[in-house]
Length: 291
Image (tube, rainbow, N blue to C red; front, side):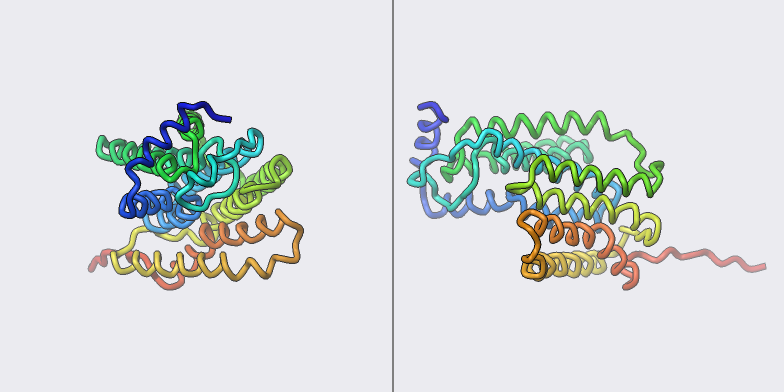
């Protein structure tokens, strides 16, 4: 459903259509895709702060799950194909790009807490949102819905962020993780639901195991960080491709849970284990005293 004002705004934006502008907004919309975030968040986990990275991953994946679920509840059609400057399938409301960019860049700004971070977040959210209107794949109400849900989730997270995850016994953690994944899958076994549930489950299992048995250090030199990012993303990319045919015999939905579960496990546990074994961290120099 849409009103004439929605269509008018799309037509107004597209009056400025040019190859250069279309290429620009296509690049911006790619930065706002779920795939981009699934690669970006592990890098934060590996290079910046694993504790922050884990919370970031859980928050963002849950946001993506909520978005997919709400889309299937409303089942709103996208603008007519004649208006679309890029191929885009699936339901329209709420915009996953608007919600995802709000969740991603807003979460980073909450962590950094600087005027520059907030300004950068606002700019990225605005550009991603505008790209969806210009490219003709969303109604304005879709954008507003995505922004609203993203902001509400950020507010909710700010109230829950004080929970000390380290105090939860690992056995209880595992049981709760499996239960949460099962409930989420049963509630939304279609769309992006299985993918988000799988990645979430992999991260929930891998994180406490990494803390107990690996304890990798994020602090590394520039060269070491480049090597970590290159190796980690290469394996993540290869897993995403190689696991697809290997799990194709599983029931639809379950195959995505298993596939992205292993990807989440690699990001949270496998990669840190490999980085530690390869010595990709700054060594602590112990002072030697003489008597």
